[in-house]
Image 1 (cartoon, rainbow, N blue to C red):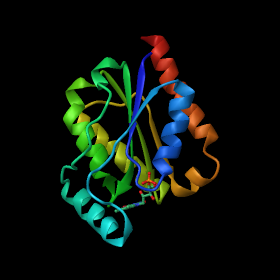
Image 2: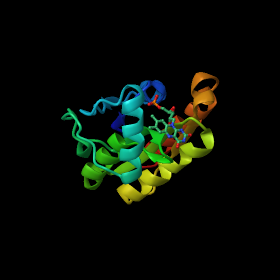
Image 3: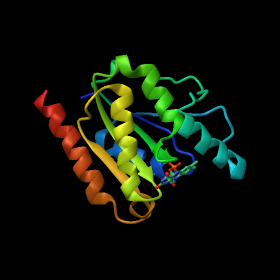
Length: 161
Ligand SMILES: Cc1cc2nc3c(=O)[nH]c(=O)nc-3n(C[C@H](O)[C@H](O)[C@H](O)COP(=O)(O)O)c2cc1C
């Protein structure tokens, strides 16, 4: 199964998990880059406002074509109780190219991370093969089993195809 892991990460949490998933799946990786400066206090405030308003992000061009992949894993952090603007923008632009999707979201509080997966389901109009929703404590601590379960679900889906 040819898999692409696409993620945005402002402070490295989603990148950490996205890279672990990509390594386990031997997947290609696309890290989304936002042209808007998201750093510092002003960047944080602007990010929250943009996410709340669902403003499209101005993304740098991406290298991979998601239509070339059997499965695309979409990842991003929660901003203001929903999926961050860059991942939302990518998912919206490419939704007709995805064959199968899986979602991975990180949040300050694990209880909010699933909201990002729900938002990606709405944006893509697709039921995910699997979802992985982690809080910051899980990202910093023990998440090996959660990642292994997620990867196993994706692999078993590929084997069933
Ligand atoms: C603008 C902004 C808004 C956020 N809003 C929430 C939120 O509503 N709920 C939550 O649990 N975490 C929230 N967070 C925390 C991030 O979701 C969390 O730190 C995430 O793991 C960051 O991922 P990253 O390092 O890949 O950027 C917010 C972070 C930012 C920058």
